[in-house]
View 1: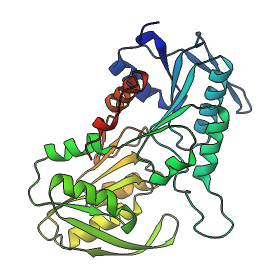
View 2: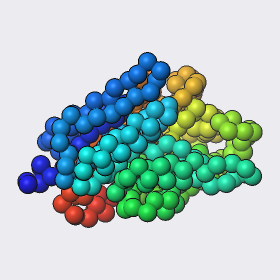
View 3: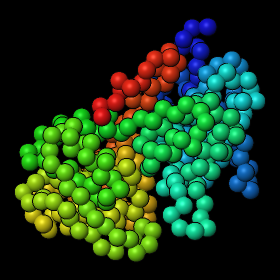
Length: 312
């Protein structure tokens, strides 16, 4: 069996746009998978070609709603029952990752639960990108290839040729990521200290560092309601920043996010296409991670190292 015929790539319904680009980069067709929906909302998946003895890559981000996760679980189960040799889940955006620990009594650890569901369903490997917390890799007992969106975001930031660039973190929790960007780009780092009234609601925010006359780039892993990142941008602009941009791996952008970004001091906000974005906001730009994921798939098939893909 030739290398190209030793693996197949399939996609869930909502991540097909990305899977098609991955297959284009790999020079292979997207596998034929059919999802049958019933009137009560239940659905079933079936492979319309033989996958016996093949390495099967299943591309599906598990962003809300929960149908995307359930669809992936059914894809894994069907592949296992169809005698696939190895089942590799390709999850560009790993949902429920914010629930990575017990931060108060009597709560679930959603990220661990999802990891258990995927493991019990039968994955042999996971390829994902920019987990909300790196330690989620330890929730799995199978190999995890953890990619970083910095591979596409950093070259884009360099292409802007911004003078007096400054990297900022919207909260203390993201300081490690922002520090890595700042070191790579050779520019200063600024932190924001925020307190939350409740989930998705920022109570107060202070800037630690000087942004006057600087072209600020705020770095984060995801943007959900955009409350934090737009508040940070507005405060930095008021503190004398020349311009404020933002970049994040995952474009969750729920609820009022698009309106907030449009009305904020942000010049632009850059995401990857790990999650589809359908709202119209002139300030949003998406960079494709298809080539990066395709190269990872190729190296997994050839048993080669993927570490050389990491810029930082």
